Amino acid sequence: MYKLSHYQTVSPERLPGLTYLLKGALLLLLTVLVTASPLSAGTGMTSGRSAAMGGAYLSLADGAEAARFNPANLGLAGYQVNSLEIFGLGASIANNSFSLNDYNTYTGAFLTNADKEYILNKIPEDGLTVSADIQASALSVSYGAMAFSMAGVGLADINLNKDLIDLVLNGNTFADTIEISGSYSEAVSYVSAGFSYGYPVYSNRGRQLAVGATVKYLRGIAVEEIVELEGLAATFETGFTGQGRMIARTAAGGSGYAIDIGAALRINESYTAGVTFKNFISHLSWNNDCEEHGYLFSFDTMTVDNMEDDFVVTDDYSRETGAFSSNLPSVMTVGVAHVKGPWIWAADWEQGFRRAAGASGKPRLSAGVEYSPLPWCPVRAGLAAGGNKNTRFSFGSGVDVSAYYFDFAFITGSSLSPSSSKGLNFAVSTGVRF
Image 1 (cartoon, rainbow, N blue to C red):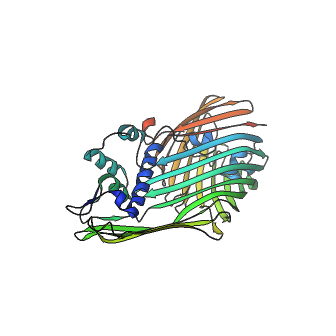
Image 2 (tube, helix red, strand yellow):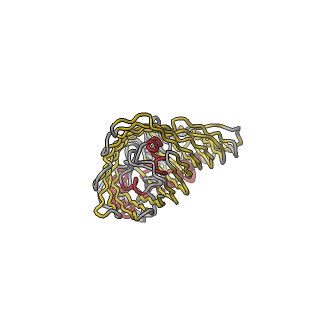
Image 3 (cartoon, rainbow, N blue to C red):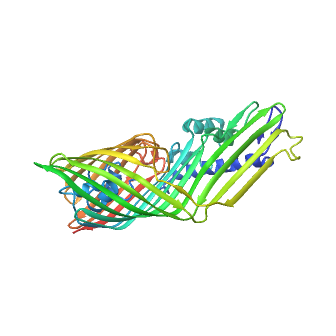
């Protein structure tokens, strides 16, 4: 029940416009809580080794993996590994507020006022964010300075205004104002096929500089993005007043291209550094089942006495539209790695140039270490923080026997305990070198 004034109450079913928003808010809230459970997947994308080292892999990736992390590595001596990656899988479905402990504590429980306050305090002022980043690769191959890679990618970034969650938990009070500004939603999925090449441009006494690029053909599977979202509701002595609108566009097919570029510097036998710009240029043209979906509502001075009249005006529609285009977010990564000896370490700085599914305008730092007590059984750990993602510890290992390798990783939250994770993660990859 949602209070309109000191004495008026109305159930959500009596307010069609708000019902739509409330049900969506509650559904998203439940979804976020579920993503804190062990059913969630992991990060590090298609490299189990990278995921275990916190994603700090720019200056370590060689062979087929170099095509995805830094194609310039293919131009460095020692990185031109002939290899076949049989498959790789990485996924991250996470939220910015609730851990596995929270999920276990509050799922199915009666929420007291203290519980509701705790839940709201866990949510940042920017709102409740849910992100998904799922990638899979298969049969990627490298030979010398060249590589061919195939991958499927699914990205999503959703934010829910904190006012809406407060409304779901506590209802509104007299002289209350609820806004939905600041909420957003964007999702895209596609398949890519890329050709990579690295070329050495300078070499002197063990120091070597190389540049490289990956040119990708993109086949768009689906896209959804909210292009307009605004709304406001307020309570007064005279009644309940509000209006809002949401417009989203979707498509179910398209094609395009993207180009990654990079540079790599082998400082000496022990250290390598590099920089890459992922999606330096990109374009996706969506031309299949393109639609616009809209929902609008408004009401003025509505009370419990007159709500049976047509005080709530709503309109929702779906209509076909013409083709439209989008691009993938550009992301710069700078990294350095110690690459020789039983102890290997790496550190990366990632910087997106805009907020989008799969990218953030805030920098993210990652660092990882690998120790090989036995040549065939490495032990790995890492830490990543910043951007629009949670702080995460990562761990992993693998098997590296002769030409065959298998790597795996799992990621926790801001502590070493798996229950601290705001979305439990994993990544695996396997292949052969020849």
